[in-house]
Length: 116
Image (cartoon, rainbow, N blue to C red; front, top):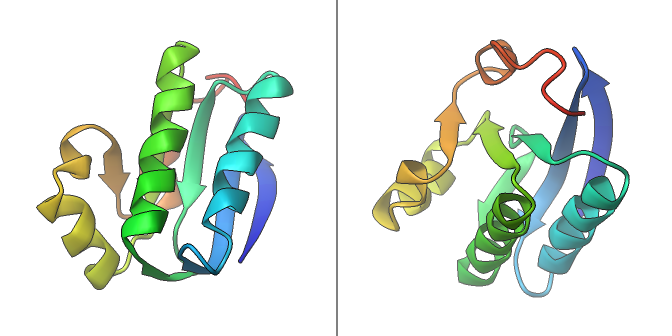
């Protein structure tokens, strides 16, 4: 799995690509969030349009990413989540903790200068 980074309206967007599983780079996601935090980005948006699959290890890393940001006083938003991944996030109630939106525009709404 690769994690691409880009800036939109002053907000850092992380875009993981591929599967987020124990053997496909789940730790890469956490490392990207830790690096972003180290570089001053406490609030992040994740573009999940390129995520094909998320297993329990990947979910655990996503929870860890949220926890790292929350402990630093930051926040996390996701967008572009496919149906299968969304069902997992909903079943585990992760969607009650992190905003999961349909589009990048919705995820960025009101976030300009939010800390990217």
